[in-house]
Amino acid sequence: FFFHLHASRRIFQPQRSKMSPSNSNQYHRRHSSSTYSLAAAAMFASAATRSAAAYSLGLGKSAFVPSAGTGRVAAAASRSASTTSGAFSRTPTMYADAGQAEVILVGCGAPNRGMGWYHAVQMLDKKCPSASLDFIVEPWFMGPGGEGPGGPEFKEWQAESEAKYGVKFATSLEDLPPPAAPRLALISGRTADNPHLLTESIAHGAKCIYLEKPGAPTVTELQQMATEAEDAGVEVLMGYNKNVCKYVRKTREFAETVPGSHVTFVSNNAYENTPESLGECFERNAEGMLKNMAIHELALLVSFYDVSVDNIESVTADKEFSSMQTLPGPSGKEYTDFDKIKFTIKTKTGKEVSVAADRCGGTDSYATVSDASGEEAFRYYMPDDEDKKLVEELTAQYPTAMPYFFTQDPDYITVKERVAKHTVDGEPADGIATIGIAVETLKVAEYLTPILQEQLK
Image 1 (cartoon, rainbow, N blue to C red):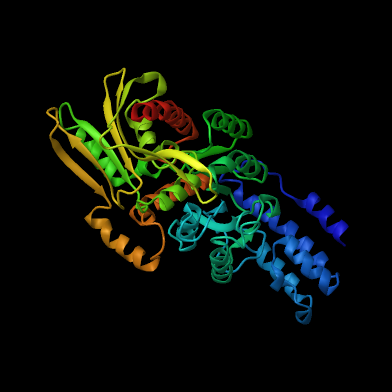
Image 2 (cartoon, rainbow, N blue to C red):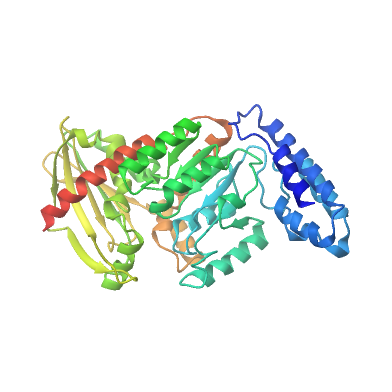
């Protein structure tokens, strides 16, 4: 039976060519029909074999129960065949519907701490209408990290999510079925893992990839990823949410009205100012602050202020504000990084802009505009008064989560929704940074880091 089943999967597996909106329904029907045929074949297997076949088909263990007979096989297959939104039976609350991207979250992380986890929470709560979170791939907490810190909490959240939403969890992209709708891979794993995760996402049918910052550990690796995706015809868009932030837009608009204006972008996190807290932060974000926390601000500089390695005339650290430490992480290994940094860049084309970032500065980010005399003329916070009520509500709902999730909540939603909609209809994802922007941003981060380190010695 299994020989014929897997042979049939190869025969009926749809081609993973790029889909246009016009042929996506045809794709759904073809894939659904193939699964119906496989499910019908499974009716002749033993009860034990039917259960294994159900898992292989993605129908779930409950689709084949010995006491229920073979009727459920046909019923599950019929439900899949009758819908244009996916060949694999899922609960009614979670599957890609018409006009939605089938999202795979690759790298979830720990509940209340991982950025991937918060992406999942937003999609499962249906905050992004064009995104259906159908699969979560988490190799660490479903593997060797399952019994370590965060492991039990992940297992509890996994069980709740499976029961409530029907989302499927896996340890590898290889465990997933072929796409049943335009597939979007949201990669939010460790930066060091991103290159091979992108390769695997392309191999397993992703039409578009949402890549979390900074994308890769080095410029060389990110350039290779960009080339690989381009050769495969897969678009890669970046999770630089501050490119679409309200405070950034309002700051830029105000600065245009002030002759000789100077803009400073300020980013804060709320880590405890202790060696233990910062050491854990340094180890978990081993790529360093400029490639991690402050990379969003560098992306703004690349996107809107003509900053590039070739166009930087000078960079000057604010030594009074800035601090660099060497601290041991939980593993005992020591890491050197900025716990706070402020610097000003002047470009060869005459632009000047500043960035400040503080790991222990609180929950608010903001931007200021100074006039030609250096007097502050404008300041806009994230969150603003309009968004503070939302932050209070989310803090009450997730009291132990990282506070910066809540201040940027609307922007995370905006980026995911635009990328998911783009995956489905092909229309431009307005304001979303491309992997090309990410390459230039990472070049700037690599260029600035040793210069600023040297200035702070």
